[in-house]
Length: 96
Image (cartoon, rainbow, N blue to C red; front, side, top):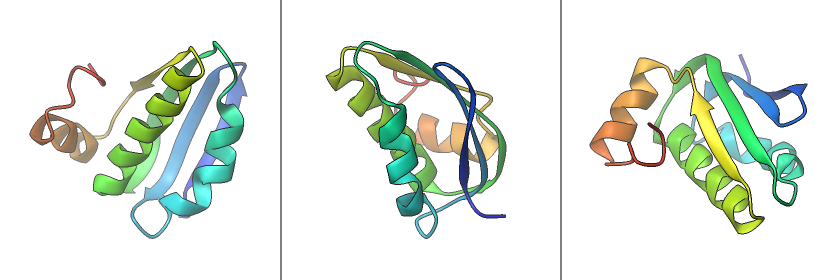
């Protein structure tokens, strides 16, 4: 399943599908469009079926873009593989 970003409502999005080094770059135009000055963004990862470190890097960069614009990002429902990458990379502070 290809990677997708779905809008749930204002400021809420869902990542789904396979998020890997091969699929994440195609998401950037959609991700950049979600970043609006001062907006807090919530991203559900419940629909992610396969992920590698590129999926976590994607969330880190998305959070950085949101912070630069005066907002923030909260990732929810991370699959186990993404949680392990977050822990090993010492990113729990960014993704509690």
